[in-house]
Length: 99
Image (cartoon, rainbow, N blue to C red; front, side, top):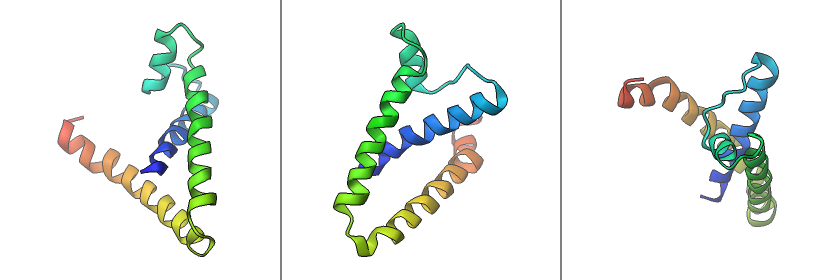
């Protein structure tokens, strides 16, 4: 559950990629909307949640997970997140919500 904080890291990286390569500035993530609603730069809250997400994830991976399980844990987390993203946005999300 603690690695759910990596969602914030992923959102920041994806938004950064889109801003750099596609020049989009109208992101639909909650963090960007909260920043705008509070009158901050739209990157303020996403940057804060990025740092918090990295701190939580780093603590879990490097302090809680034993060294002997660390590689397989990171590999399984990476593969699982890619598979989950592909399943949700490629099949399940559109099927459930008629996107």
